[in-house]
Image (tube, rainbow, N blue to C red):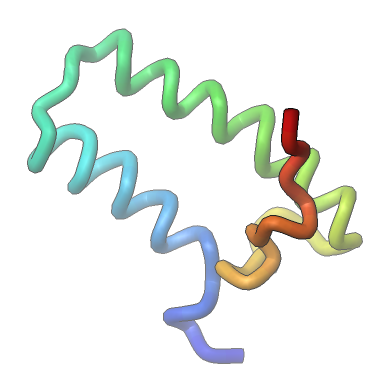
Length: 68
């Protein structure tokens, strides 16, 4: 599996580089994004039947999103 396809590094990059370094968002906003991912990733892992550390970018697709 290609390492660039793994979801973990992208999540880390989003939380550290984008939210903090590029956007300079407030700490509470950063924590809100973190908490959302804490809820989303286990849900996604159960839907695609994989461990969280084995999730890929392709696993996070429209197929698993709930549309309102």
